Length: 388
Ligand code: NDP
Ligand code: MG
Image 1 (cartoon, protein in one colour):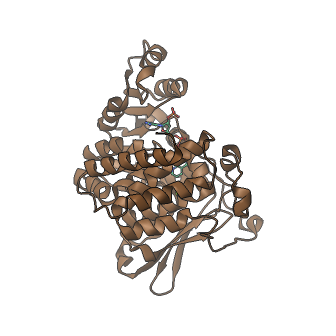
Image 2 (tube, protein in one colour):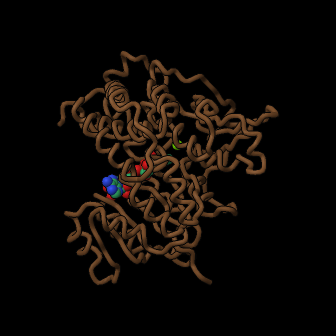
Image 3 (cartoon, protein in one colour):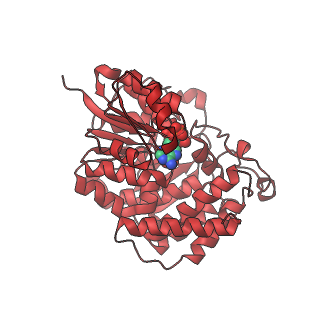
């Protein structure tokens, strides 16, 4: 039997490790061939994964760590590479499906390279859609592969959006846990540390997305992601705070019906759905026990305490380039918050200021336009923080 080929970009991260866990569960090396994996700083784990799955090519994005990776894989016959070009090479290796699990806009060029090969793209990296929007969707279409959403909300919508009923889709309802500061006042939020911001109540995720969940920039990115993925107008996209994270998102139809996808907060369900598509597979995740759950709560989001949501709406209305600007400025502000150079609430102020500076940019016609706007938004954000 021929094995399915799956490459994993960002294999050493939270999504990457969960993906390898699902592959293990589905039979590991017996069932899958892994042409390529990539990481950045965690060379020990990258090398261990490469050996365990017998990958063809392992690459780190850090050009200074190649010797270390080579040493760790000496005698295995596994090819190695380092630096951004090596990540592109990994993404370009022939595969049936590529998991896009690199964090940030750093994932855009490699995922585009993977799309070009015609592989199906299991998309966890939301920044591809937020920054490049329809250009990214078009690139996957042109390549000929399927675009399979892995972000749990979008995966939920993908599961319940009936293609034959597209004409009757009225609204997309994204659920948000509200993060660790759901009930905190703005004054209290001003003094939180990166460590408290990273402590998500329900999901176990990478550092950056966990802090983005606390500021609700994660939900802001997901609103823009939904706009491009499901081709709906901004006013059809709603956000509802649902602290239990049991309903992963919903689609509302013109007959008043609302379809939802529910499950335990475990990314392996979304990852497994994408890998198995169009067939559901069996997974060892926790089953919902409704009697124990007892209640599901909902609460309207507060854009005064979480301005990221209002910024996303503005970006969606002002056109595609503002999504890129919002994300790039946010990435710089987030890094500055993690380095304790700015406060938690400063992040939204900086993003807003850069969006105002760069309002009025036309829609990108090439991916180079996106990278130019990304560089400019980063430069301006650094300048505002005083890091230039
Ligand atoms: P992590 O930080 O856990 O992992 C990120 C991965 O990308 C690691 O393999 C890391 O390498 C690698 N990496 C970091 N920087 C670069 C770079 N500049 N170039 C190339 N590779 C790099 O992130 P997550 O797994 O949490 O998230 C990955 C993506 O999936 C994000 O876009 C996130 O928004 C999205 N997502 C994540 C979810 C989750 O549950 N974690 C849920 C929904 C979406 P190393 O660790 O070796 O340094
Ligand atoms: Mg999500």
